[in-house]
Length: 284
Image 1: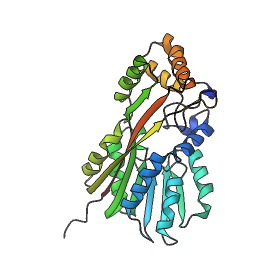
Image 2 (image 1 turned 30 degrees about the vertical axis):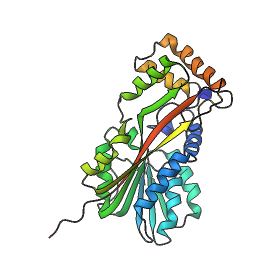
Image 3 (image 1 turned 90 degrees about the horizontal axis):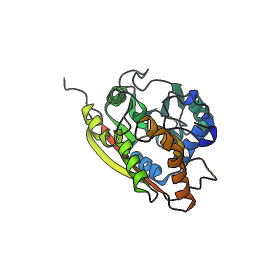
């Protein structure tokens, strides 16, 4: 992938990417999406955080979602942000100085959280499960570190919902077929969030969805649609999946760019959100 093509499809190893700054900028762009803000508002309403409570945000990234929840916790509350990327956490720490509650950020593994059982009143995990090898284990860890009767919120993408419309049925079909399959990661985990919470013993599970739609992209101004991966990275992925011949890659990208130049580019992606209550303490 060329540097001017933005970044690829993954956030598994951000710190090892040659263009970390682009990843950070992309995270900032997605935080401005109406769809993301709508899901976060819904999450906040259902988490019902109160002053003095403790929240853990696993896969916190730049920390902006957790920072927005700090007001609900107040000076006696606390937020712990966990992420695998030191670069992301450096930004999060810098921005947390004016938070309404203490915030601590640490590098960690979502599959093995370094926190004791029942240490938090609530947990959230946004667009992180899709990059993990075992989402069910990660959800189990979230419920483990939340007290009985606490709350767990999950927000994630289902890449099988990606629709690309550029007026070329062949391109549309290739993208749709490629996104249906999962390889080495749970790219379609969004639609399974409710089942994952229930499988971890959570009850009173509420669910919702939001779809982000791109109706414009100027490929001369940006290597990728706002907050998204580059179209060349998408083409590379199709080649890796065996669904696009390598010698067709440049034509595939050129077709999409041409459609965008003609203002014939539309893309849509659906994200899911759930909130549930952790199991109560067993009766004695």
